[in-house]
Length: 143
Image (cartoon, rainbow, N blue to C red):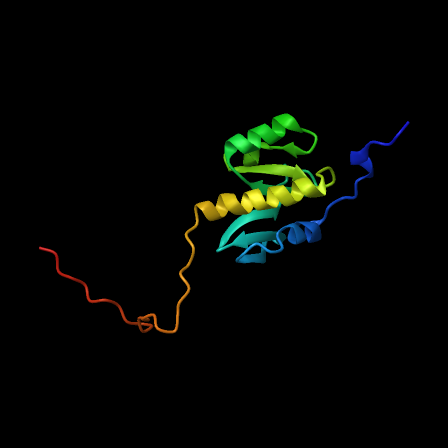
């Protein structure tokens, strides 16, 4: 009897999640409620799921509801939901069961999902005007 490839696959920890995000612009590692998370331009796109309903060693990955539902239907042993997460555009991923290539795709999908709705900050050039700190524009009187 040959062993199940999923059972022999090593558990993927957050180091591998971080590695899957390597090369993506503006990504920062933060902690959210004491757990590791990745953000882009201030918006979280993946984090360790810490809600008591989530299984241990689970990653919460942001994505649209249709993608989430398709993943759960396709591989319920890897992707799942708990009541706490139902209303959020994310899927829960069992890190011990997800293939490394799938993890990379999930991280990039989450990144694209978040950046599509997050405007880029404009880079300030040496010649761009800057308003002095502490000064506000004069209020115009409405009549």
